[in-house]
Image (tube, rainbow, N blue to C red):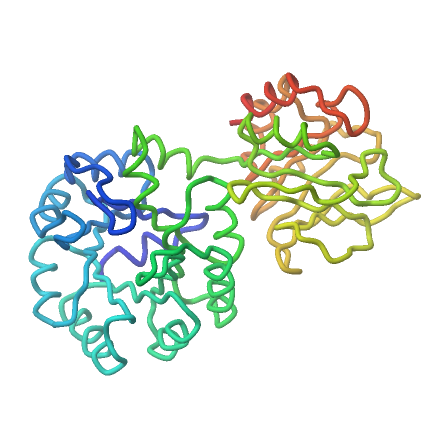
Length: 387
């Protein structure tokens, strides 16, 4: 096999950056796109692989794949509507390392034939599903790389919630296969939620090709740490945190907290909401739950971050109203996703990030004028420093 599957299996969230000039749903995106130039730029911006649309309905051709192959050593996915083994040979000759198999367009017998032909040619495959029936087919085919498309290719409607449920379902079948969340990712938070749902990678096309600077947009989607503003109780503070560029918004629902929110306030789908509890949880519309133990009538030191009841990260905090000079060293020594909290603000968050390299940072009390009321300039300064 080629390096496509291997490139997407590395720790952390990988990205497949897609080159396409137009979209049937959005029309022209970047008609004058240079596939070779973009492929090289995407490689420098951190892409694990590049997808190239070779179908004329997307303004593409095999020449685009050849241009990308000449410009980068990254694995290339040839993307289009393929039904014949000869299609795969042409893609291989043009420089593809992997090919797309759309289960919407082929039955199981033809899918098996294409999988076998791809293996003969030394090509990886991305078997794409967009609903429960197609996902079960992909699993039954034992496809090593499965893409779950949030876009319905008939109506072009995007349903990210359904996509992430399917990703989580596929991940529950075992860790060995590579899962890709396709379409619908516009922000870091949306990419992160795909990761937390079980995706190894995201495939991003329209969001990149419609951006003023496609490689800069890709680098932004992959950049870490995520930035959380916690202890929000007012809609005006939520709006400021979003405008500043926060990725996660925290709402404390523990009864003893002076920052207790009335509820998880509404947030747009471009960011993630986090419900914060101490010991006792309750049903919540939040995307994530941050759960502390209770010690001496207050929250304990550290917490777990949960997605649908499963731990997805560890939160390293300071003791209640106390310090610890070894706080950063303790967090840095931990493997896996770390959300770093405790006394962070604009004046120290960069130093903390350099020491720990966390997946996310979390600030609350030092961004306030009083408990539960944010100082808007402090919020903006903290988010800017953290990003």
